[in-house]
Image (cartoon, rainbow, N blue to C red; front, side, top):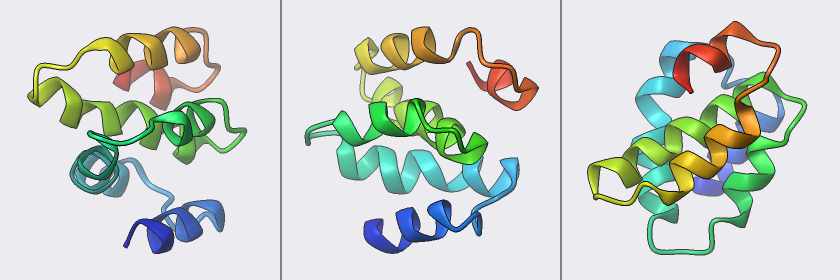
Amino acid sequence: IIALYFKNAKRNKINNWDFVDLSAPKIIGDYFFDKDKRKIYTLAKSKNLWERRIAILATFYFINHKNYFETLEISRILLNDKEDLIHKVV
């Protein structure tokens, strides 16, 4: 599921805020909660708007489990993003 999700994000098939907002925490956040989070940081630095949004929204899962570190770090990366869809979620 994770590989398919990333493949579709790369191909811009995951391309609207509603889909990202509903899926990223439950799929990406849940998967990476107890794993190496480098992939989420890579997404946060992507040129693709939707990959950046996936990165920050994935951390909502972490927040629900009382882990705030990644959310704050990803927020720092995205704080000056030019896209309003990133500003709103950060």
